[in-house]
Length: 259
Image (tube, rainbow, N blue to C red):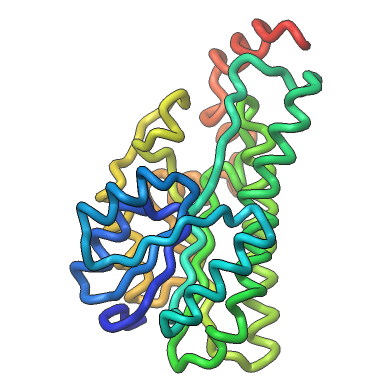
């Protein structure tokens, strides 16, 4: 896919993976619009990269999402919708039977899954009108190997994975040219993953591999450990589950009073 000259909307684009994507997309020659809930982070991103357009918006809110669409439409529209925003509720002190965990799960499902569907539906007609357009959904290595400590986060990403596959085939059946990409990152060195254990890939390396996959039209882009894990999970699912959930995960669960 040709990225130079494209206009890209990145949700959660003011920090972490999103902000690194801003940097690399701009370097290619793309125009970038970022959105997020944190005004200070958006202002900081704008200072770093004055060429971007920054719009404060909460994509988990239906009214905010509609306002975002209207603002983007007034700016001339987009060619690529990059659904990068995601949340991970703190699971360390909550067991799955704790009442607060239900609220956390609802939050994760709303942001990580339902909000993506809402934005895709809002922007679909616009994207269909473009000659070479795309939707990019970010899932996770945990979308096919569940995590004991991030159970509902993994579930939200699994839901997004299956939706992405179905959406791609649905669009194909309608003879639309909109491409549907899935980015499947491993554990990434970001603020959100600060409390998660395991080997981390840098945001720079992740986005570099991600963009390379886009340019080669790899609709499913597995980066780093997700390449090996996806193969290993098919051949030895129990072993893969154990690698993602080592003994210390069980010890952490044992310490959760709610269980």
